[in-house]
Each structure stands twice: as structure tokens, then as C-alpha cells.
Amino acid sequence: MGYLLYQLFQDNYVTAFTFDTTPSQEEDIINKAYAQAYAFPGECALRTSSAIEGIGPFNSISPTFFPMNLANQLAGLPGAQITTFTPALP
Image (tube, rainbow, N blue to C red; front, side, top):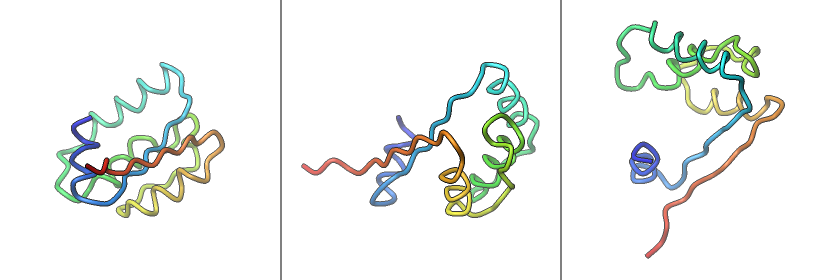
């Protein structure tokens, strides 16, 4: 929740993508993420796309530095569930 709130403070909206995955696929993603070297600021899309690349529903994902490129790849995958969050107005 903290990540979502931080991102909403930085921008007008946040788009979240969810997919059905198996426990084995999730373990593979976690292992790939932990195997990556330290991530510098601004490498979130590259680190995320590299961790999910080739696993389960992410077979066609290519690593990218650009968040919108990753979003477009994710949106085009079968089974993508897309949710957009916007800040609550007072």
C-alpha cells in the first residue's frame, strides 16, 4: 500500500496489472528478482521486466527501461487484469 500511495503522490494515477500465476511461477519470479544486482533509481521497469521475462503468462515479455513499454507489453498479454488507481479527492 505504501508503494501505491507514494506513486499516487507523484502522479495523477497508477495502473496495476495482475495475472493468474502458479506458486511455482511466483517462486521463479522471486528467485530471478533476488538474483539481480543492486537496482539504481530509475531501473524499476528494467528490473521488473527482467524478473518476469519468460515465466508463465510473461513468456513474451522483453526487458525494457521504459515503464510505458512494460505497461504496453503487459496490457497485451492474455489474462491481464488492469486496475487504475486515482487519488481520492477531499
